[in-house]
Image 1 (tube, rainbow, N blue to C red):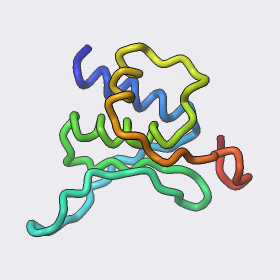
Image 2 (image 1 turned 135 degrees about the vertical axis):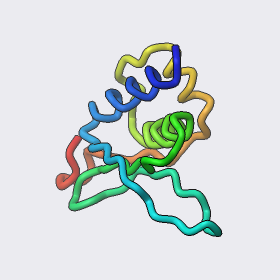
Image 3 (image 1 turned 90 degrees about the horizontal axis):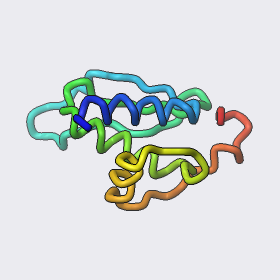
Length: 104
């Protein structure tokens, strides 16, 4: 499976959790850390910010890292995507059902 297909499938998967994906041009100066994006809460909803300038591989990493914070164990994930997620270090899991202002 090529990287573009993996990226598309990870985006579809995270959107099933009600997470909005936003591609943003993250302004950075030359001497700063390269910011790829990440999961955040904006106006009570989970939003995944992806740096529009990031490579496909880096976007896959950001999506995978965000998914590791969600409880994806009970949904079907293609084996190739599950293997990819298994290679990403564990993240603190978010309880999306605990806060009524956050969409599940």
